[in-house]
Amino acid sequence: MINTIKSTVAFIKERTDFEPEVGIILGTGLGGLVNHIEIAHSLPYNEIPNFPVSTVEGHAGRLIFGTLGGKKVVAMQGRFHYYEGYAPEQVVFPVRVMKFLGIKTLFVSNASGGINSSFRVGDLMVITDHINLIPNVLIGKNCAELGTRFPDMSEPYSKALGAIATEVAAERGIKLQYGCYVGTTGPTFETPKEYGYFKAIGGDAAGMSTTPEVIAARHMGLPVFGISIITNAAFSGQKSTHEEVQEEGAKAEKRMTALIMGMLERM
Image 1 (tube, rainbow, N blue to C red):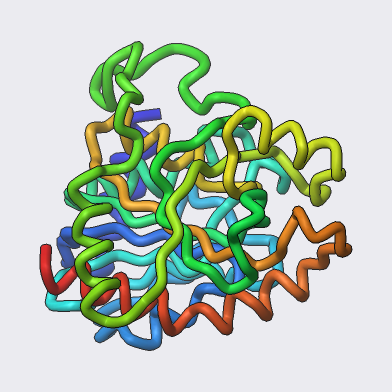
Image 2: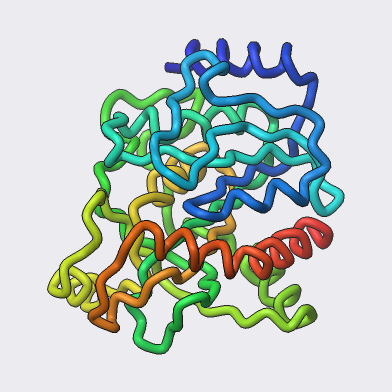
């Protein structure tokens, strides 16, 4: 695996000559953040050796290199999911690549269903912890060059980055929620009883991504900031659709963009 990662990194460096400080993963309907990046290079996934290809509507499938909030960033405009049929190591392959490209911090975003009844559609939730119900990406032989066999997960999401988010949100009048994200395999939206189970075990929001990437990032020692846009309210009993998720994600995107840009400026 490590040779495959290094081969892909060598290709990207040859094409871009760009060393990013921060990696950003953009979830369903959230790809518009790239409109605020001063783009230096853009690589479609299908041109990058060993990269998977996005198959989900709302995921453009490009690796963007440029400047945002005064920081050199690499942004994934579209991510990969276990439910698409990819093996866990394929899902997190881009995170490994970004680490070897030089990033020191990872930002992850997603669209999720609200479990906490105090949440409303359109809310931004800073992820403070997660419950991973997707097969763990570290199952199998461990690569010591990537990280330890048994990585600590007592702080999956950086408290320091969370504090910066709180400060920026207060200054810019952005309302934040805080909570635990439940990562599920999908691709079905959850049943009422499943949502009840997620609530009982401590979940505040649920989605079909994020936890694999965060586990891989922490395995490699990268601090992570995670944020969810609550795009549908699971507790309402209303039916959920992918179109609804995209639409609500787009509505909240401006606030998420302002928050991330403010955080980057302060880091």
